[in-house]
Image 1 (cartoon, rainbow, N blue to C red):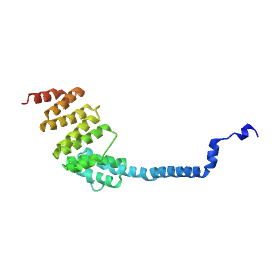
Image 2: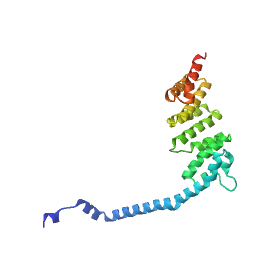
Image 3: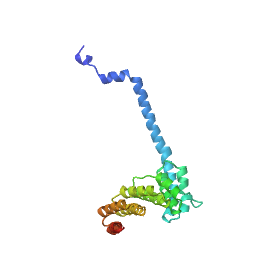
Image 4: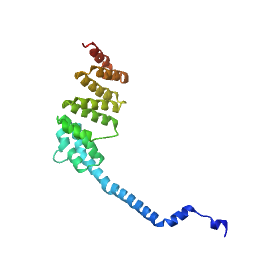
Length: 217
């Protein structure tokens, strides 16, 4: 018998000896892929579309600052609470949590505002920074100073490219520290604002804030 005929092929031998197992594995893979695409195309995609449709009126009312209509709808259209409850896991439901949190804050329901804003997340850094900042505002209204400062700092650091948003929320953190007798901590944040955002409104006023604290007895 020639050398070619007697040469072993490990891969072919493996396939031959594991034919059943490989068949099961391949079948499972095909079923898994079919299930994934079936779920995406036949279930999740239609839900995303329905959720987006349901959000249309709520987004309009949000722009008009009509918070109750944002939350509960106007009778002929649904509000964001409906979208959250009926279309959980969709992008629209996630955005609805942001609208709900902001709207509850506007209606002075600060605990609800915190609940929905903390459950919201987005890769849009500017929006996420505002969500963190509004959470800080809600904690501030509830006199929970430590949490308020924490969220203001988080908002100020999340999207430093936006000087106005970042400097504003850092200023709010410093102002709360100042009100609570932590002047040295407040000064450090004011210096940070001056250094990083010198052309922002709060950056231009930083020296005034710093000097005021330095001359206090």
